[in-house]
Structures are given as structure tokens and as C-alpha cells.
Length: 178
Ligand SMILES: CC(C)(COP(=O)(O)OP(=O)(O)OC[C@H]1O[C@@H](n2cnc3c(N)ncnc32)[C@H](O)[C@@H]1OP(=O)(O)O)[C@@H](O)C(=O)NCCC(=O)NCCS
Image (cartoon, rainbow, N blue to C red):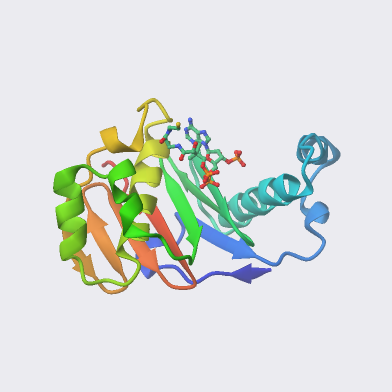
């Protein structure tokens, strides 16, 4: 298994992995039946990768009943917490800024355009996706999720309630609410 480097402050809260050998060996027959219920092999792999990320995270000591999953390309991730949590992972890709108006308000777009970080729109996208998941998907569109930038930090952005990070992937993790 390859473990993707994430910020130190995320340790014990989120894990992103890829390239797991013998993925099936992590699961019980009952769990494998869930994985196999997906028609597409790609979807089966995504399910297994993200659930292995959760298992490994808990094996490392993470605790809590709340969990969030994400997959992108060859990556799968999980975040665990005692309160609602949201994780989003995006494989590096070109994200045309012309798409920004689909999910950012005009004010958020102005803030985004002042950021100097590479792949800035991907950070904003991930942050909204993570917050959306933390809210359990009850907010109908990403545009309705307010995103307030607090600062640019090493390798990422710090928003109210959610941090982003860029390394091998761009990822966003919500901050504990208390
Ligand atoms: C659900 C959504 C996040 C999936 O997008 P994706 O690119 O496949 O995202 P990820 O791989 O990062 O995340 C998928 C995971 O999100 C989680 N998820 C799905 N629905 C969720 C919900 N309502 N609340 C919290 N998490 C949810 C699931 O765990 C899923 O993984 P799983 O199927 O293996 O369990 C996507 O629908 C979305 O972007 N919603 C945003 C809201 C929005 O704009 N809706 C309008 C649609 S027209």
C-alpha cells in the first residue's frame, strides 16, 4: 500500500492511499459482498480503497463514529472523527477557471483569483466538497456552501472550517467543530 503524504496536523484524522496489493484480503466475506454488488470494477476498487483507508486509519488509532470517504483516479481516502467530518481528494488535474461560476459565488471567485497557490480552483472545489459531505449532503448545491478564506498556508489554503493541501493530490479535510 502506498500512503500519500498529508499535513502533520491531519495525522490520525485522515488517510489517503493507493496501490494496495491483495485488497480483498482486508475484508470479511460480508464486506466483499458489498464491494461485489457494484457492477463496475472501477467502483468496486474505489469502494475497497476508501474502506481500506478507513481500516488502516482506525488501526493507527483514529476513533469516532463519523466517517467520510473520497476517491479520485488511483487514490482512495477516508477521514474519521467523533463529529461529522468531510474529506475530498482530487488527483491533480487541470481545472479550467471558466468553470468557477458553477460552484463559487462572485465574491468567492474574487477571493480565489487573488490566491497565488497553483491549482487554486481545485483547492476551492475540494474545500466545498468536503464541507458538503460534512453537512451530510443536505445542502442542494455547492454554490450554497459559504467558503471563507482565512489564509494561504504552506501548500494549502485555510478556510473557515476546512483546510486544503496540495502534494501528490489536492485534498480537503474539515476541521473538528470543537
Ligand atoms: C456525492 C458527491 C460528493 C460525489 O462526488 P465524487 O466526485 O464521486 O466524490 P468522492 O469520490 O470524493 O466522494 C464519494 C463519496 O461521497 C460520500 N457521499 C455520498 N453522498 C454523501 C452525502 N449525502 N453526505 C456525505 N457523504 C456523501 C460517499 O461516501 C461516497 O463514497 P462511497 O460511494 O464509496 O461511499 C457529488 O454528488 C457531489 O459533488 N455533490 C455536491 C453537491 C452538488 O453539487 N449537488 C448537485 C448535484 S446536481
